[in-house]
Image (tube, rainbow, N blue to C red):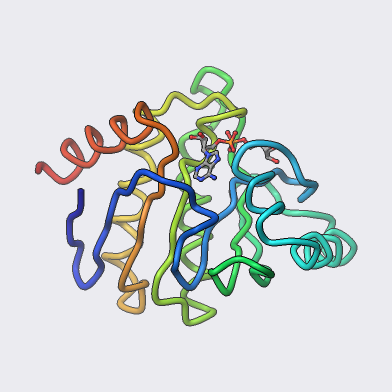
Length: 183
Ligand code: AR6
């Protein structure tokens, strides 16, 4: 499923983000930048030690990555040249700034992508696994944040993908794409 926002193709794909043939993939990391499970574990396993070494340097230099912000490393053994690590919010019922923090994850990641001349970027569904953010709510926040970014930044990547692992997540994003873009 796909749509176009200005000059950017926005695509929903079901699959494994570690295999994505794009300039950068985004990792649903944690604010300590310490390897975890879920998509973070899969990206670190596929990318190899170079990713952990790069995260260790950022931990030493900056202490980690605050929730809603993003940092960039090399992609190691991945097809993607870069990994953009962003720390999503933990769902706590929706009244603790979760939607603003989640929107900020997408916008901070896209800003880093632009700063590094990334033309194609793939996102997983940030915060909707271990961090418990309800998928349909997260999908609306994610797609709206991306739409706003692309409308404001003429250097936005030409291709933005969501690579969604399971059926339920794919369906949640497909429904959100219809409601946000009216298609
Ligand atoms: N490709 C694409 N999506 C995937 C893949 C994959 N290979 N593997 C899992 N997903 P989660 P979070 C989906 O839990 O909720 C880690 O421990 C998964 O099905 O990975 O942001 C970090 O270190 C779900 O739809 O991320 C943090 O501590 C989505 O990715 C914490 O988990 C996100 O699920 C972050 O939790």
